[in-house]
Image 1 (cartoon, rainbow, N blue to C red):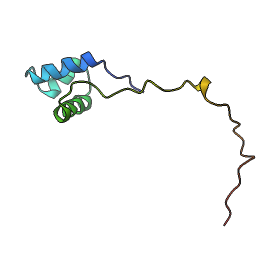
Image 2 (spheres, rainbow, N blue to C red):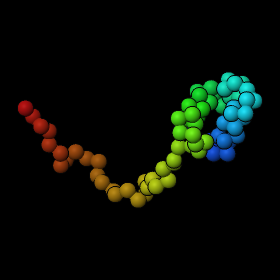
Image 3 (tube, helix red, strand yellow):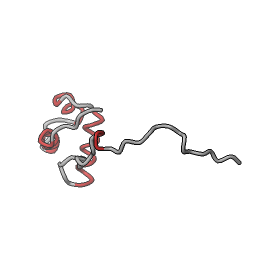
Length: 81
C-alpha cells in the first residue's frame, strides 16, 4: 500500500496552487505526484477549506495481540434446505 504524503508536503502543494504557481498538471509534475492525487487533494481543499489530510487510524492492533482461534470447521454446521 502506498504511504501517505506528509501534511507539510500537501500544504506546500496546495499553497503553490492557490498562489497561482501553475496548473494542477504542472504542479503535479513538479512535486512528482500523480495528477489524480493533485485533483483529489484540491477537491478536498475546495470542499472542506482545510489543507490537512484525512485522519489516520493509529489504533490498529498488532497480530500478536489477536485471540488465537483454530482455523478448523469442526464446530460449524451447514444449513441444508
